[in-house]
Amino acid sequence: MITQEAILERVIMLIGRLAPPGTPIYPDTDLAQDLGMESIKVMDMLMELEDEFDISIHLNILMDVRTPAQLSHAILNLMEHADGTV
Amino acid sequence: MGLFDKFGKLAAERASLSDSHPFGIRIDEMYSPTEGSIQGKRVILAGTNNYLGLTFDPDGIKAAQRSLELEGTGTTGSRMANGSYAGHSALEEELVDFLGRRSVIVFSTGYVANLGVIGTLASAREVVLLDADCHASIYDACKLGGAEIIRFRHNDVADLERRMVRLGDRAREAIILVEGIYSMLGDQAPLREIVEVKRRLGGYLLVDEAHSFGVLGAKGRGLAEELGVDSEVDILLGTFSKSLGAVGGFAACHDAQMDLLRYASRPYIFTASPAPSAIASVRSALKAIKERPELRRQLWTNARRLYQGLAESGYQLGPQASPVIAVMLKSPHEGLAFWRALIEKGVYVNLVLPPATPGAVTLIRCSVSAAHTPEQIDQIIEAFASLRSPVDLVTVGA
Image (cartoon, rainbow over all chains, first blue to last red; front, side):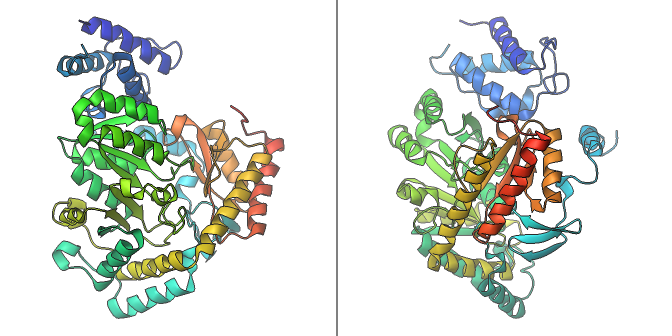
């Protein structure tokens, strides 16, 4: 079973591709405030993550997500509740 | 913290623009569907979505005037509380007949139609799959309803299918949302292929024909008619503020049970109904769409002429000729300079900046009208062509 740490690592890697070059990304980096990621960019990232983990990630989770750590936690939660994808 | 402090970034961005910017533009006078005055300058209007040029149609104006005299300036309330006017119901019956559907509901705007239908159907237990480039009103409607929102890549049917497969059994009840013509790039949804996915995996298909109603199809019903898949589209959504030249919106369904939304849809129940004069002009415009197919033919002749002219001038454009023609530029800064230069040359178009644009590109968005003369189309092309080389603002093939 995949761990939250492994998800976090992949989330940070993906954010690194979308964030301004050279910007450090930590588990508690604020995607909007610190990285200036517009909502469209974050939504595009969710599509990438859906394909990366082969799960459905609905946009509604963004209401409670501001950081990579929160995002990886939300993805793990979805994976635990998905049928047969973990 | 002040009430408006959260808009500090917005204020800074606004302050960085000079007084001449597109987000507070005022058209001081209208001379025709295709000409007006901006900042004391007479301009060709190529950014109004007035696809059939019916805003100045003499029959529409007469109908609206007659309605003003007989019914007054407004309804002063909602259809649920105050009752419908005869015109509201007559227009719904005419749209039922025109679209060949069993139920039509008229709303106060196209935005409200999306909120009222999608926001009511896509409730908390539902899942919606929407094209990533869908209009903000569709996103807002999904949020209002509380459905689980899954995006698929723009016009990518394989991507839609992959996401539906992931949903398993839930896909059978999912709501798929696409547009006939997309408002930013002017491209069309691959509706036949989407219908094929729906046949295999299930789901309900809703198509927003805001930019394609009156524009596509042998009778002008939109993309679903054009591609022969109307019977597979569960609900058509549309607006009166583009080809029909007024304001308002509608939803049309093959299932008469959609009428139940009149008692469940808060954006229908709790907002004022369309002004009777607007309804009167829409009824006249709908008649024009039925009886004057030459308007549609002229629109497409103009659209192809402009698309070809801009392409030959070296611009990178949206993927297909369309009454919405997107010209892609390098950056917001250059987009703004380009937009101003076009006004100076007597051409008004829309500037659309990221993040409101697909792929975070800067767009100069032209909308073509059947009322544009060939000479006006050529003037627009000449204005663009004159800006191409000397200013070197444009990225070709970027």
